[in-house]
Amino acid sequence: MNIANSQEEGELRLYQLTSHEAHELLWKREISALELTEAVLGRIAQVEEQIHAFVTVTEDLALMQAREADERIRAGDASPLVGIPTMIKDNICTKGIATTCSSRMLENFVPPYDATVMQRLNRERAVIVGKGNMDEFAMGSSNEHSAFFPTRNPWDRERVPGGSSGGPAVAVATDEVIYALGSDTGGSIRQPAGFCNVVGLKPTYGRVSRYGLVAFASSLDQIGPLTKDVTDCALVMNAIACYDPRDSTSVPQPTPDYTKSLIPELKGLRLGIPKEYFVRGMEAGVEQVIWDAIAKLEQLGAEVEETSLPHTRYALAAYYIIAPSEASANLARYDGVKYGFSASDAESMWDAMDKTRQYGFGPEVKRRIILGTYALSAGYYDAYYLKAQKVRTLIRREFEQAFERFDALVTPTSPTVPFKLGEKVEDPLQMYLSDVCTLPINIAGIPGLSIPAGFSDGLPVGMQILGKPFSEETLIRIGFAYEQATDWHKRRPPL
Amino acid sequence: MKLSREDVEHIAFLARLGLSEEEIERFREQLSNILENFEVLQEIDTADVQPTAHVIALDSVVRDDEVLPSWPQNEVLENAPQAEDGYFRVRAVLE
Image (cartoon, rainbow over all chains, first blue to last red; front, side, top):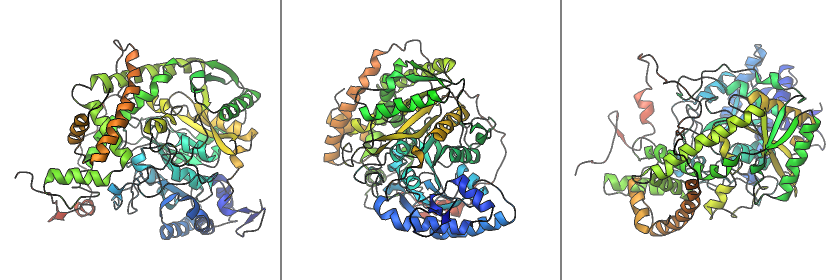
């Protein structure tokens, strides 16, 4: 490898490395963690103004952690993520570092504790470069609902990066960090990963601890990695997946070594293509890319067969009842008393609470609080929330039945390429429809991986691979085999 | 389902969420449209279906009743909008 920190044409620069490439060079002492971190910080200085992926850059902390990592490497620490710079989505609690959820409500909130995933990364001596911009409280599909600024898609800065983990997806796509952590409630890792040409995994519900993840919809939320390739996805999963007694929904199941699934062929694997995911309104260019990708999987030895999941059409409605209902309960805690924004221009306790929430929350959060409160309110609970929870059972069963016949299902990640800023922000239902291929997966609690599958009109298209609960290894194997046979994931936006 | 202005005001009251006049009208319109689309769920017969609360069936999760250290009070209060003598300071509840 021809490594250089200079700006000369054609040379690989340090910030362009994947985690596994950087690890190898760190271990051989060809580079130091400090050099790598300085290269990443230089890249941020070079491109951040054009894309706005960060809410906070923690430069001093990163340099300190890089020096510590170098000491550990000298002492023989071979952890795969030691000294590798990362971005953390700003809804994951980082002790002593502001965790804003891109909301006015938490603009000045500095957590007194680390999320479990942060304890795991800190134990590996990862280098934290900063916190990633997102749709406020993870509610949105475009990053336009950040209370601070929208993140731009690096492939076309007039377009959205997807959301809600838009900052993490863009930071990885533009080499501002080597990898990132996001969260996914209805597609918030996979959809921006697809829109930005990076790899994103939503693990099985209960696979990664939610302790320290600011709650949006507790029965749907999961933390997961955004990476430059599938190998890195496996490495980050090895670091963050664990049983955690502090998250009562965490599942006590041993964590496999995901790197053992990096096998470049698919012989004997049965893949189902659910026709309902090729929805009306899907762009022809996207559909073409996905069918080409499926043909490639077949060439690699997989057996491919079309199938049907008829309840898919009810997933959107069920999701947008369940998620806002849970959100309305979770966000009741923001009362201006314990932490967060507090309105000072109020006359009484109730007035203070009304105003705190009026000024502290943005429009999408308010919309969902109202929707959720309505769905849970007396007289409507049975018709909306209970009905949606029953439909959830039907959707889950349908997946279970499909996985009796198939090792995995393959779909597009999104029905369209990235849309333009402003295109959907005033039309919430249209915005919600952009998650139509990703949200059934959260409803069923199963894992979903989005990988770069090609381009339509110069814009990235993601392919989504789904499996039964705790089948991340199968998804990683399929993603890895596809990646070995293609080079879409190596394309970087012109910045 | 068409929401009325009063519906929106009532829900906002339940959620303790202050809304401007303009927000009430905008949300009334948008949420009516969204709820109308949700009526699709009524097509499905769910009479004999149990609701799913959690997707991975777990037994009741309990732990031993052990005393563990809590966070230091001063650290927890550092994010409080108003604190006094180790307490959160609140407005008068009874008037």
